[in-house]
Amino acid sequence: METIFPREENAEHIFKKILENNDACERLRELFYEEFANSGDRDLSEKQFVKALFDAYQNRDLSAFLMGICGNSMFDLLRNAFLIPMRFNDKGVTNPVRLTDAEGELIKQTSVNKQISQKQYKMFQQILDQADDIPDYEICLAYGFREKHDYRNKNEINTMKIGEHIGILLLFKLPKEVKEMIEDNEVYSIVWDFMMRLEEQLPRAFMYYGVMDENKFEQQSSEIGIFLPFRHFEHQLEKNIEQANGIGLGCRERILTMIK
Image (cartoon, rainbow, N blue to C red; front, side, top):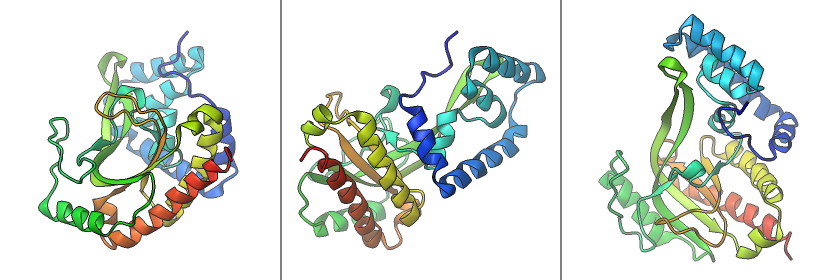
């Protein structure tokens, strides 16, 4: 029988890297306990719980059971513990959503509920005016979010957006040769290493990786994205961006050494 969600590629490699990192293991455990403690608030009947348990056993689907007991799939837990980067526009859902164009002008949006304040836009313009001239690099305003999944009545899957924020998105473009010459799991492994550095220096920053589909046109090359929500990083924003740039550029340089 099929699992609720498609199995992630190269999951074993990701699990191995997490197991080798004590801080990563602690973050995952703490998030699971926190979400499990909140499970009493869920409208899941005894019968629905038992059905989720039995289905998970029969289908060898851990995510199905985790959704029943803690309201997160396996990879929800990993993403929400900031242990794996998010794919740009994963499963066809636009995330992050760009709010400014290449010139820094606001883009009219109908799909984003959060409003950009004048203070936020002014901060962004100041950052843009003072930004260093870095090749294949872009700064924009963006809206980003994370997701979690649980069950509604009759075991229907419910998708919830969490951690919705407006913030600064830093984009580090990779040459198309990366996509052509290097296996995706090799690139992903490097991105993971630098994401751990990001979370050490700037906890709760988002890291994205993959092909960013803009305006419904797929780009020819991959990008690394670092998203700094204003809520967590507007204090000392310039310093935070400088640190994030160092990590993003270091990650890109490490990837490029594989094609030189």
